[in-house]
Image (cartoon, rainbow, N blue to C red; front, side):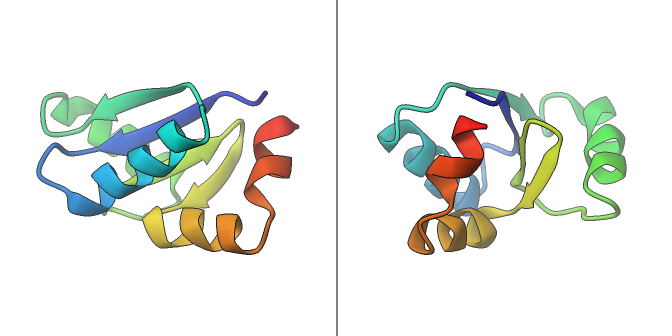
Length: 85
């Protein structure tokens, strides 16, 4: 299974929703709280090609995007295959 990393903020409802989906699927992920670790936000922006909002989700080297994109992959039946690579 590909490593999953999610950049979040504790005040973000979309972050909670994205983490909930990953947890429901039994996916282990590492979380970077950019509010508690503001020095990591520039890393997130660079990896996400300029996106500044949270969550920003990465599966391996693939930038999924945010919560909406994660759920779109799930609805399309493509998330499991991406996670399994």
